[in-house]
Image 1 (cartoon, rainbow, N blue to C red):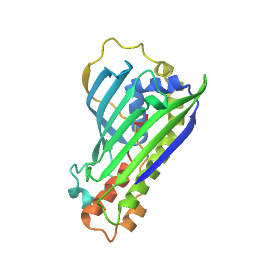
Image 2: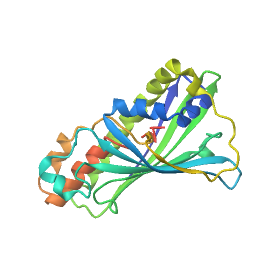
Image 3: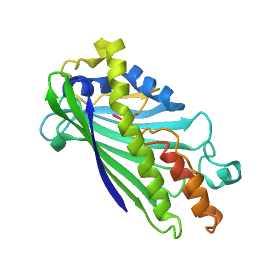
Image 4: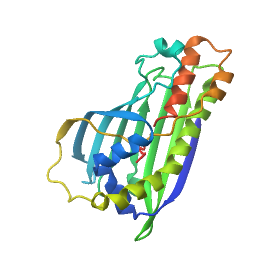
Length: 242
């Protein structure tokens, strides 16, 4: 089990950074960096117990180039190595108490590999904020590879969160209309489907050489799990990740 936190300065206000979540073109912009294809499974809008408008959605992410070795793809539920990201966030509040919640579901051993995260923004000035994340990774019942899988996922996610502020700032500078919060919605409950991008745990492709070395002694199923989770380190977001 691994838990870690990240905190990186972003050259946008907290409100501007959070507003980007409403722009699906921003999602696609981040997806292009990571060579991924996104498909929205479902999305719904509602209010939380405090009356804050919320968005909840599930997205299927597929790598344009499969990072899992061909010999192991038959072990996966989805040979294309597509995984699901479920995210829920409040549209107009972004402090730690109201953090975005994200879960990444892998196409192999999803009952043994758990990846969850929370993300929020801390105001610094009218033009800056800290983008903060808290991540929980847990791998169970995979003797011999659990530690290396957790390590690979953590590395990929740390790299992704480090890159996120610069990507968000660059997009906002060329698309200033996106860094403006939309009006508070009218009664919630609307559900939609279609194509979109989920940033929450999107990461650059992970180097799986270390995983392959440590998994030599494991059986094929465990090796497949290691490869899949290493590539999932090629996943997660942002949420965005935002």
